[in-house]
Length: 431
Ligand code: ARG
Image (cartoon, rainbow, N blue to C red; front, side, top):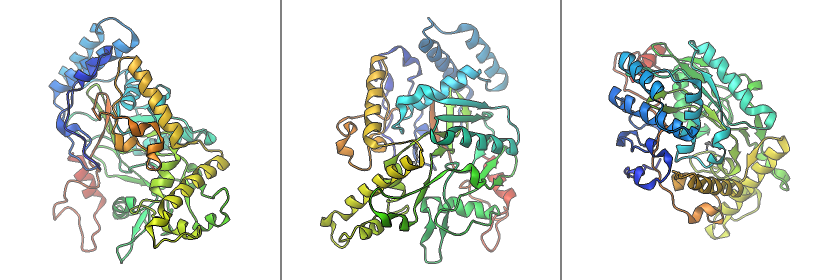
C-alpha cells in the first residue's frame, strides 16, 4: 500500500471552528500499510488528545468554549487510571468524525448516518462473536445495506486489546497450492495459513470458501468461529446480456465489513471496531474479481466475449473490466442488494467536500484510494487534488496479531510448520 506523504501541518489548511482536532500526528501513526508499526501513546498525549476531542465535540455541538466540567473529570480519570471511559455520545460522535476524517474512504457523504453500536461491556469471545452476527444482520437489513459500526472495549494503555484477526468479517479463503498458485482469494492466503495453524480444517478447498472469524481477547488464546451460511448474504454474478457469464461461477459477498483497523477517539484506542457499508460496484468488478493478484478474471471474461487476448490493442482488458462491473451492478440489482456505481459515488464525494468547505472544514483524502479504478477520468474526482492529512479522531492500521512478533524457536512451532494456539496468543499479547 502506498505510503502517505510526510505530514504537513493541517492547521494551516483549516479555517473553521474545528481546528482544535487538527494537530498533526506523530509520523509513526500515519497509515503505512497493514503491517505498519503501532506506536505506544503516552499518557501526556492522551490528556492532550482528550482535551482536543472534547473541544471539538463542543464546537460542533455549537457550544461556546471548552466543556470545563467534563474536561476536568476526564483529566482526573487519566491521571488516576491512564485512560478514561467515554460517554455513549462521545463514542458515537467520535466514530462518525473518524469516518469523516479518514483519507481512505469515498463514501463519507453519509458520515452522519452511521449507526454506532456500543458493545464495550462485552467480556467474552462468545459474546463478541454473537455481537458480530448481529452486526452482519443489522448491516444487511434484507438487502438495504446500513452503515453500521460495532465498537468493542477500548484497549488499556500499554496492554493488548480485543482483536478480530480477520481483515473483513466476511472474506474468502485463499489456499496455497504446491505450484505456488492460490485457489480462492490470494489476498487471504496468509490469513488462511494462519487460521489453519489455529486448527481450522479448511472449507471445500474451492474458490469461495468463507473464512471463519478469529476473535482474541486480551491474555487469552484466539477462538475460531465458523460463520453459519445463513449469516452471510452473497450475490451470484450474472450479466445482463451475456448468458455464458454464469459459467464463470463468480459471486461476491453483499457488503464489506472492515474489521482490522484501530479506531482512535480522543486518545482512547478501540482495536476492535468493525464497520460495514455498501459496495461501489467497481470495488468488486474492477478490483476484487479482476486484479492480477486477486481473482484475475479479465482474460476469462475477454475469451467469453470473443476478444483477442494476445493483442493489447484489442483493449480486451478494458472491455472485460467494463462488462465485469456491469455484471456486478446487474447482479446486485437483481438480488435487491444496495450497491452504487462509481459516477454516483464520486459525485456524492464532491458534494460532501463542498458541504464540508462551507462548514469550514477540509476533506482529507488519498486521491489514489478514492479515484475509481475504472473510468476514473470520467468522474469529477479525477480533476481534483486532495491532501491525505490525518486529523483526529481517525482509523489506523494495526499489525495483524498473526503476523507479529516473530515467534521464538521454542514457542510452539513444530516440524510441519504448525504453531500451537497458545504461542499465537502469547505473541499477540505482547503488542
Ligand atoms: N475494497 C474493499 C472490498 O472490496 C472494501 C473497502 C470498503 N468499501 C466500502 N464500500 N465501504 O472488500
